[in-house]
Length: 199
Image 1: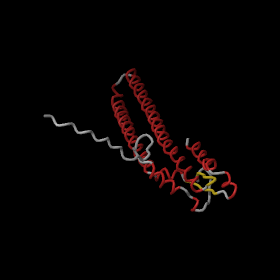
Image 2 (image 1 turned 90 degrees about the horizontal axis):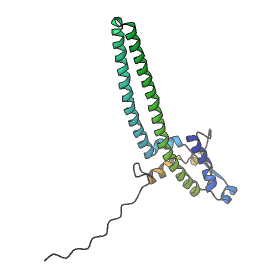
Image 3 (image 1 turned 30 degrees about the vertical axis):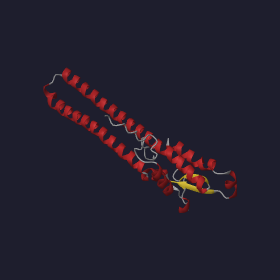
Image 4 (image 1 turned 90 degrees about the vertical axis):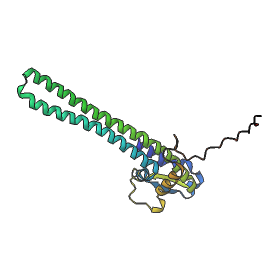
């Protein structure tokens, strides 16, 4: 997901910039999406929410593991007085529970990974819009993602990450509706006409 988004960002400004500007003196910029993701307020809020969800799921797993630990201890203590058939049944039941916990672990991991992908995609999509605006305003023919493009050195003046973060935070606010875009104050309702006083 991130690779696809980054590839799109690399070509985004090229499409947006006028042809004559590119032919005359192409400007090249770059952004660090990971750094921008960490710095924008919406990214911080998303990470905090994901951390909360992780902690909740981790507590569920911890409870299940503690149950297994206690069950194993009880099984070991009672094994001496159990018949072979009972011991075999208890052991099979214990192994079944272990497998269930392992499956739960995988399921919770997948759920968290999917939630992270969903949240990051929303932010990446918004960043694409902001980067396009920055590129058009600054006359940049190319905007590359620093890490994926393998940039070893580039002038700091061509780093658009701080501007991306600043413009993103100014435009998008955490929890401000589905788009997250800052909205103006709600329109006030027209004043109602006064009713004549009853006699």
